[in-house]
Amino acid sequence: MISFGDAYVEVLKHAQEYGIESCKLADAFGRILAEDVSADRDLPPYNRSTRDGIAIAFDAYESGRRSFEIEAVVAAGVPTHSLSKPSFCVEIMTGGVIPYETDTVVMYEHLEIEKGIAEIKQAPKLGQNIHSRGSDAAKGQVLIEKNTRITAAEIGILAAVGYDQVPVKRNPKIAVISTGNELVAIDEAPKKHQIRRSNAPTIVSALEMMQIHPLSFHIRDDKDLLRQKLSYVIQEMDVVILSGGISKGKFDFLPQVLVELGTDLLIHRVRQRPGKPFLFGKDTANNTLIFGYPGNPVSTFVSHHIYFNAWFQRSLGLAKKDVKVQLDTEVKGVEGMTQLIPVSTEIKKNKLMATPVPQNGSGDFISLVNADGIVIIDEHNGTYAKGQLAPFIKTR
Image (tube, rainbow, N blue to C red; front, top):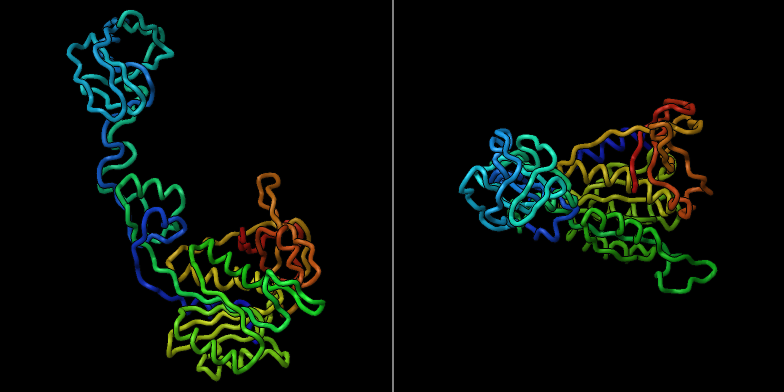
């Protein structure tokens, strides 16, 4: 059995790269950008009006003119109009191209317009209400750096610079497998000695949030069946995530079966609570990684968010953000055992405070709906006082 810190480092040592692929812009949300994205032209590409009103030459106003004859109307999306005299103006709509001869926009609220004459009622400032060409970004400027997770904000930029196909990091092929004879399908009515499968859907949904669409199925606690199905899956997948069957029970066959199939068990049992039986291995022949989570739901939930998420972020080049929260209550340490505690967080006096979620053991998955993260209580630090900082892993 190894320490939590050593286990965490060992998992990250096996970060993998799976190449680059192209996806449609509509499918890019949540993916990891594989190259820098630069402006294909100045942004905005022209001087544009930010208000509905009139465009004037400020020199004319400064010379004493207050009334301007309207000689044209410029809408957004049409070529601009060339002003024939400095004493004239054009009506211009938001987004319209500013005429070269003008440099100031006066909005309708500051005008009186009658018989084609616009009279200015409030003194303008030179250059007001104009979004200048290139003021957001110059042509060639990097707008989004590679290894960025694509959100709605990045989608807008990608669309604006013409990325109908987006280069993204290829996600690993993953299988999520639950084990256990006590588990039945979600749509079945369980008998008194049975429960419905919940761990696999939990893991699958967490992966789907990362735009990973895994294969998922269940295997009964049968050595031959486990050996047969895992042999195929390990050959076909980049990552296999197992839930259950890795502890020391008489029906926990997975560690033995994995070794028989050629898996090098790099980690099996960690000084942590929950999730002490955590397993991590590698099938070198197929370059397949194995994550094994204990069958208790809280252990599965915590292990996945701590280990797999960190490995995935490292594999896809995402920068790790070290976040700490202040504890809103005293948390007693356990000598020789790192605690991974689900918590709820709240902003209090401009500080992020964390409170452990009341639990009825590692099988109490109901409590997880009240948690939005996990705090890590180091085995060497003893009791954490109220207000003390602790590392925090966000789960929502």
